[in-house]
Image 1 (tube, rainbow, N blue to C red):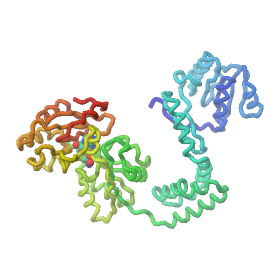
Image 2: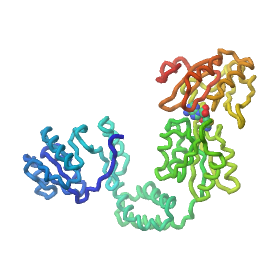
Image 3: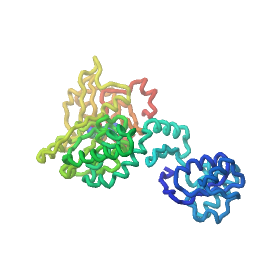
Length: 461
Ligand code: SAH
């Protein structure tokens, strides 16, 4: 992010605009939405600029800008038709330490003006760092459609009502009230006169005051393999409503971005061999937050019911009678087969599929190797990076064909997804050579489908 978005208070603040043509007028129209003191410097004002001066909306100086004119300015817009004059003005602003914008010249500007959706006091600013003005306009058009015209009206009344709402307990109760107002009762009332809306707000507040506070709850939520679009709608809603999010290292940054801004974020790094928070501490943290009445989201990579120590966490809640729910997620095996254009089961090939871990409580996990070694079997090995040699050895020992296809998928569904196609005979050597740093799943018995490989943008080695 090169340009940092902020909202500047321009109330009664001096803002300087240079130029008297179309570009200056466009900026003035925008600035007139504020209560800034607009000082315009130009030797040739267009009639429309003259009119603004006559109406007292701007102060017009019929000359070019001089250094002394900007000493107190909060912002400066150089909108001169003459590009060299605009740059001269920008130089003066820079020397005086005043934030300046040269209209239609991103490189020469200290700040740029975003595309704006105005539902005052709700303002949405959209920027693309100059990379894609078309995109900014498309987003603006979409938001213009989606945000009701009367949103500003509701927000203004809501703002006046804030002191009364302070009577509700802080946090969840207040949020529930505002969400009810803005998303349920508010839009229904938007066409009513202000007094009606105020009366309705008062009775809504009464209804909310009479409610007993929500009890704590824990949602075990599957965050999926990384791509945020693979979240379920329920998961997304739970993230939006969470007071506390306790998440594993496998949960991707774009998924965490979707959590409610005010949520307390607790990272409990848990990764095969890296540093991790002991399970007891995780359990204690979940219980503590839920007992405080929080809506806790326990966010786990993939599906929470697969190699996620879910039962231990549920059992920790039981003595306290804390309610919980489980929201399934897309497991790594599903994302991985999707990435290579295959299915986990196939008529005539395999009627069953196994999800196995190469890790047990102590060391490597034993399996029914003879069954896994049979021709046509498909298995997904979780946490298998370090155990690849062990798995390979056991399978070969139990009669698996050395040419059995094996695919390793690293960071399935993420932008840095990598697919490595090999055979059982070369599994361990190839995994060592590729040294995957991210989460990796080993699919035994599957090779990437030819057509899929050709369309994959990732390197296949
Ligand atoms: N509950 C998770 C699995 C947790 S065990 C799920 O359902 O997916 C952690 C293992 O899952 C990792 O060691 C890796 O083998 C696998 N894994 C998780 N996310 C992955 C991803 N995006 N790509 C490949 N493998 C992944």
